[in-house]
Image (cartoon, rainbow, N blue to C red):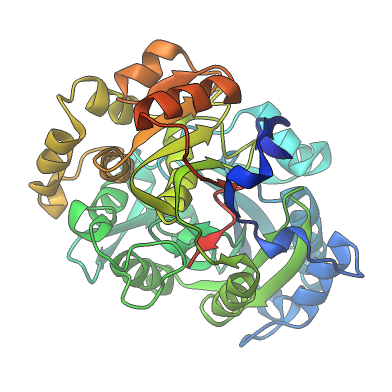
Length: 423
């Protein structure tokens, strides 16, 4: 049996005996077909907002309109969404000063090339684009305190807007439950200090901070509060398939539209777990598999469908290396995953360090499972992070077999680990 696995901007083939396969877990978003074009789907959502007045009505009379937009690390089809949003606003208010605020969260700034790839030349050349810098305190406005006790500092460009809008996409998220909606604010345009407080060890350790869970999720509760205090008035979130094409869109109230989108996605992305000794997964290809940091997300899908002591094989290009210096150093300098986890759990909320949350999840995985990375990242980097390096799927299976000490193992394959909610 040959299974195509997303890898960078291409794919890797996995050839495996059908008799060995325990389960093949797909999101049904990849099978969902709409009779409308991507632009029509977005346009219809804007015309039929959920729990909100239309964007045309909200835009009238406003001087400063800010549109929060995801950065280069997210496969949001902004080249489809943004023209529709801009056309809607300009039709209602041609005099408005429009700013696109790129929600980098704690990531690096997007390059000009990445912006043009995301929006197209016309938008980059004609619309004011501001890059959020979470570490620039002068850019932040103090909005008080989060329910968790952390300080709430949000980008001043957004806070000073007459109308604040956010575009994005909804996918399963490994500790926030789902992406989209309120995440455009926190972590999207929040101060690094606010992100650190929200992503504290206590919250990441919560059994509710898992893929597909919103109720009682402590990170989600903080994020909702941040969105409310920032006066996020309107969102347009899409759901995409494996080709990064829009299959559905949800516009309107920041909470009601987002929840409707989450319900839609959960109905398609839910997959019954099939426990196996070896689980193969990916991070869905480019842009989500640019680095090891992001690839932890796809690994958590394997975690939910693996036997105790099983082996995770992760296929992720990682053309950008580790993706976080502190994340890398935590493992390079750490004696063991157990010691890394102990150090993290002993930190209070305001002692959270950069990239700690990703380190915490990876340490949790490594405490239970050996991980084999099929990647273009340097071998030494992978080994520094307590994982095994393989240059091909064949080599990865040889390593897995050696680690298991037997050849009668079963395999579950999750071709796109970030698109599935394993139940």
